[in-house]
Length: 636
Ligand SMILES: Cc1cc2nc3c(=O)[nH]c(=O)nc-3n(C[C@H](O)[C@H](O)[C@H](O)COP(=O)(O)OP(=O)(O)OC[C@H]3O[C@@H](n4cnc5c(N)ncnc54)[C@H](O)[C@@H]3O)c2cc1C
Image 1 (cartoon, rainbow, N blue to C red):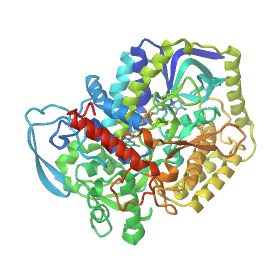
Image 2 (cartoon, rainbow, N blue to C red; image 1 turned 90 degrees about the vertical axis):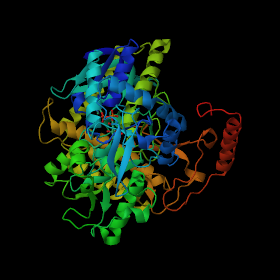
Image 3 (tube, rainbow, N blue to C red; image 1 turned 45 degrees about the horizontal axis):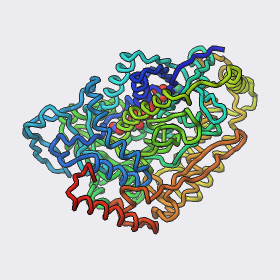
Image 4 (cartoon, rainbow, N blue to C red; image 1 turned 180 degrees about the vertical axis):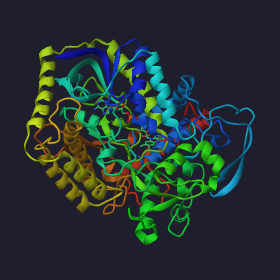
């Protein structure tokens, strides 16, 4: 048995994982990063539009600060977020972005003087001040009061990830690529690392660590059409779930992005609309102002996705052989702007649609995009129930997005949570609690267990094809657990997924019996894990009888703070269960800095909680008292 010992095992080499690695290294601890692919090819590289940080450098960002960013984030989350976490995040984002600049990210900068911009379909001249010249600039994004999304053209994630990976190499972080974590090693409520499989030669390796971090990103690929990279399969969430001890939070909170291209689902960034692009229907009519007169195309993502779907249901979609779609018009921005600030979008349109977006409209439709749910953690990033297990980035639910994430808040979260969680892990490592106390025999048991599962898959003659099961799962999720949800479809989805899970025990790897590089074997075991993850999403959505953020129930259209101001917690305590166990965690209004209110979209249909008014009165009176005493916003 090959065993590798380290202080911190980090599963995932995207922005979040790499940021944790450099953080713990700086505190003097060893770190090994596992990744399915070379880290620079992690999904983070796909982020286009930008990173939110309230720098307030550019003219349109004037007046922005951490308080405004916090408010936008909480409203965006439809009051599902943990407000302590959101505070930590908005407070640290400006630091994280400057740190990245120092590590080499070439952020787009303010240029003094006049520049032309498109706002609400009108040409507007913006005059940038002399003093701001050369500072990091920002663009507009959905659901934000100020222009706060900092960017490097539309290749933001790419440049962040390259800088972060270079920094990790500079810090001599050990990176083991093409190594897939298969199971967490744990005993008596404590995590001790993971069993990983070498994807090239099939060898199983035990990584034994004092702390383990899951930073494996989202689980978008349980849907048939997603903007996510194909490796975003939720295996990290499954690793936690399969311990039977760690829990997942709000798995039903799935974001659909308004503008993925049809049919393939590749994203065109929100920056297109942030920079002035418009949504048009089959008649070339700009419909969003009719639905959302204030924010129009730049309402929160969940809102725009629903409005687009509603509009298509009214027969206003463009018919195509791939189903209805709408148009994204960025021709209005002009070729020069597109070639400078939206060049990835241009290339995507040229390569995957054969059109020039400076001349032609882009066919778009809302598509699965982001996982707000994930491994439930405390604000420190540590699992609430499995000691020594940490999680951050899109893999986690620590929980700053609640039921809807704002564009630009995710890459920002990866580096901020990575920075903070690294500190909490280091504190833990510096304590006596972190000493390793697991017997090698126990480690060996975990390795043997994984080997036995692989052997069984290879020996099975049950006749089930993993590719078929997976396709069925993806279609069920797309058709029945989508943008608009209802009890009947969700119940059907749960029942059908449960049947798929039972069938997945008989997956037969007919294509190749090789134990080494064998994509069919990989697909077989990942499919089993993905169906479990899909079940946590579908069951959570079925049981949540309200509409909050991206979770929209046609049979329960109100946000119900009286009964549902709580997080969904799922776990899988017995491996023989065919459905996850579900419980709930209250979100305490009394602890909120910003008590629940109206988000400002459509009609206010909130069912209020009796505690809300008292909480609001209390917050208002504290604020007023401090204002009367002449305190500034920091003290308040
Ligand atoms: C097309 C697109 C555009 C986006 N644009 C923006 C944007 O402009 N702004 C914004 O804020 N957000 C954006 N997002 C969201 C953002 O990119 C992601 O949420 C974020 O990058 C996730 O980073 P991460 O480090 O958590 O995970 P990832 O970057 O997904 O990294 C996951 C890592 O885990 C590894 N891994 C996975 N499973 C295993 C396993 N079992 N064993 C070992 N390793 C494993 C992978 O190899 C990878 O290294 C966008 C998302 C998409 C899909």
